Amino acid sequence: MTAPREVAIVGGGLAGFTTAQELRKHGYDGRIRIIDPEGVPYDRPPLSKEYLDGSMPAEKLPFVPDSWYADNSVELVTERVAALLPAEGRLTLAGGTELSADTVVLALGGRARTLPVPGGDLPGLLYLRTKADADLLRTRMVPGARITIIGAGLIGAEVASTAAKAGATVTLVDPVPVPLAPICGAELAVRLHAMHAEHGVDVRCAMTTAIEADGPEYTVALNDGSRIVSDTVLVAVGIVPETGLATAAGLATDQGIVVDEAHRTSNPAVYAAGDVARIRHSDGTLLRRHEHWESAMHGGQAVAASIVGLDLPQHGAGWMWSDRYGVHVEAVGDMVNGTPIVRTVDGVPVTAFRMESDGRMIGACTIDGGTAIRAARRIIDRGIVVDPSKLADATVELKKLAR
Amino acid sequence: MTSTPDPIRVATIGDIDEGAALVVDGDVNGTGEDIAVFLSEGRYYAINDICTHQYASLAEGWVEDGAVECPVHSSRFSLCSGRALNLPATQPEPTHRVELRGEEIWLYPGVPSDCVEED
Image (cartoon, rainbow over all chains, first blue to last red):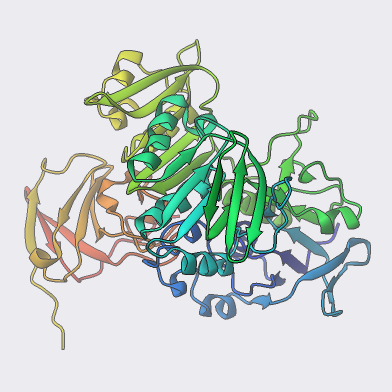
């Protein structure tokens, strides 16, 4: 196979941008295009936090200063891709233009999932995926405005915090009694979820059965018989991976674009990374898609390494963070399996670990824990066996246990 | 016209633990920006303390392999050159020269470090 000379990256989120950045870092000197209808690639996490509350200005959202693209010869194409023609080394833009590309990277992420209930397709419902979505949502977060958020996962919870701080009257609906337990473990997830009510958010543990619009007002009907009337409804019930282009091009998909460990799709000239990609190991095991920031960055790094023929970067246990109500949450690894060990301060759980029966740590989560997660990550990745009594003792610095 | 502040004695050997840092307040060091003095593998380094990505103190971060990792979003900075090694940060941290005078650790605020990265 000849070395690629024209890489087209479809999607300017973290996975797409990282691919371009890493290709140049590795000395790839062929053409790189990033094609995205939104133009300059930007970072998404602030959209539910600092950007949404207005404390971060729009010019801080892009990954790099605009001059970076010219300095690194990375072309930005502000358009939507309509079709991939990998066999012909081309792709078609929505406007009809054809671009040549011997290598394509699909980094399209996902679109917001809609609620499969009557009224779930109402045009006035809000979602949060893009900067434009955040701009619109911000205009609704005014003191006294009634906002109903359906879904108390990461985005729903962060927006609830931001909206409550802005003075809006917030109702948060989720059928799961303790959301985020699979990411943070029950002990800390309970504490995190309780913060909503502590900050005046009306939390409803119920299924949404219908949404009705009446002029400017929306009514959300719940399966406990109650009805919530509000000015704005944000639906935050997860994403659907953008597999349309891949499917149309005949690539293998299975609730995501199926890729190997090198992030190659079923067509060797096409790669996929980020929220849209689903890794299938060589033994056939299909992993869950990882919808986290760092995972998208790692995906982009893996794609770039694959394209230039370098060894794949090795990554340890997956990491994520969230910010709400002035606290910083981080988690690493597996918080579902294993036995919990919880560190408390004044009776409040601060850091939780998950332990295998052989004494190895498999997961950790902390609320405002400083470098606790970094230390835990090292303990997990290096298989360091730590005395459980020290893990449970909040006065023992975790950093010391990780050395 | 701006002038470089005078060097200042910030600590003596033993004050800063291996893998830890001491923050020298912007008002004290004269640059107006907080500077963190790190000890990593027996060597002292100084870079600006606040992460170039978002507000966080790098002195609270994880020090390993000649880099400090921001405690909030895990951006890593080279202690030697101040270079941002991974996203989300992309802008470098200014470096400052550190000098040992016997047991004393002296900081030259605003004077870039002459440290050269190995690789």
